[in-house]
Length: 108
Image (cartoon, rainbow, N blue to C red):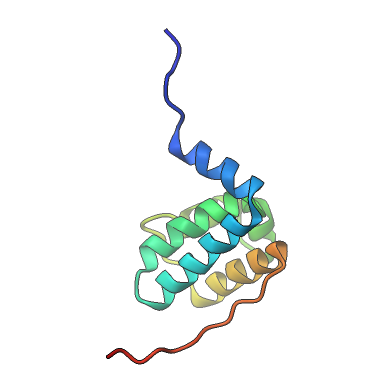
């Protein structure tokens, strides 16, 4: 009997590639997570976005690191430098042709 389910990561990759608005929403969410102290979740979401858009090789070239290092950097236990993360966000931003803006909101 054939496989009845599809791997969720495959579905996610397909959707990111097919829907630029979805890719932008994931980048926005990864940015929000990172800025709000959820570094691990942010890295994992960035990993999905990188995989479906720019690819690990392009990030490796931009960060001057081996591709394998970029895979580790964007893993649950990754420990990228601020400089490396900045490059990842920058490369994705350029590929998606978007600008990232932040705002601070006072809590009630």
